[in-house]
Amino acid sequence: MPAAQEANTAGTVRARPDASRRLPPIDLDRGRVLLVASGAIGVTALPDWAMLLRVQYGWSVRICLTYSADRLVSREALAAVTQAPVAGPGWQTAQGIVPHQELAEWPDLVIVAPATTNFVAKAAAGMSDSLALTTVLCTAAPVLIAPSIPENALARPAVRRNLQCLADDGYHVVPMGPGVSVHRGAVSAAAMPGLPVILRVAARVLGTGRGAAGGNVSANDRTPEKIRAVTPDPTPDQDRTARQDRTPDRSRVGQDLAADPVEAAGHG
Image (cartoon, rainbow, N blue to C red; front, top):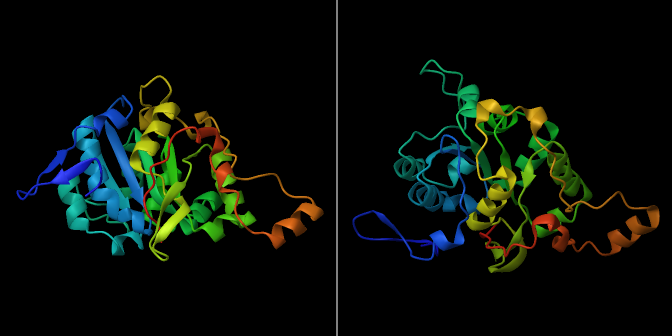
């Protein structure tokens, strides 16, 4: 079980005493959070995260999955802890609603965790080939992106450009931090940030502690939050040096927020 929670035999979840002390105060106008998840191993933490948000903050939580995330986590477990149907990966219109519009207008805050390399690239390009991507593109609520990107991929200029593009477009990219690599079974310097880190960033984004209602914030009103994960385009000499040493400068990922201690989830 995660550090913040433990389960008893009755199937209920009890928050540990230190859980609330590690979480910042956040006031959302309507108390609504949408968790959007793509297919990295960190998605398996979502049931615990959703319960923590409900118990500690009293928020209503909904979840939307991509096709790959849907294969890694139990929809039944997510529905149980959120007390709401799980959306995605496809569009279900039988209930007479337009799913991506309804989901986009519902939350005060959107958290994309984990955000895979594929999700980041598609969101940066404005692609909308899943309900999750379309919802993120259409919402006017603040969107936090919690990347889950392999270390070597993070060294690629294309990946760093995509992260910078998201920041330029007004998304809030949460810094990655240490975590356990599922593939190598060892600590990696770059993994999906944990929920406390994500929520501390959310508290900063929301500023005064009052959440912005989704319908009341236009996409043009989002202040672009520059991340320093992406350095300027290298000169030819710098580019040659970079090709010789492709070690990613992970210390610069989200450096503007790096003062926070990072509690990160594992990644693939």
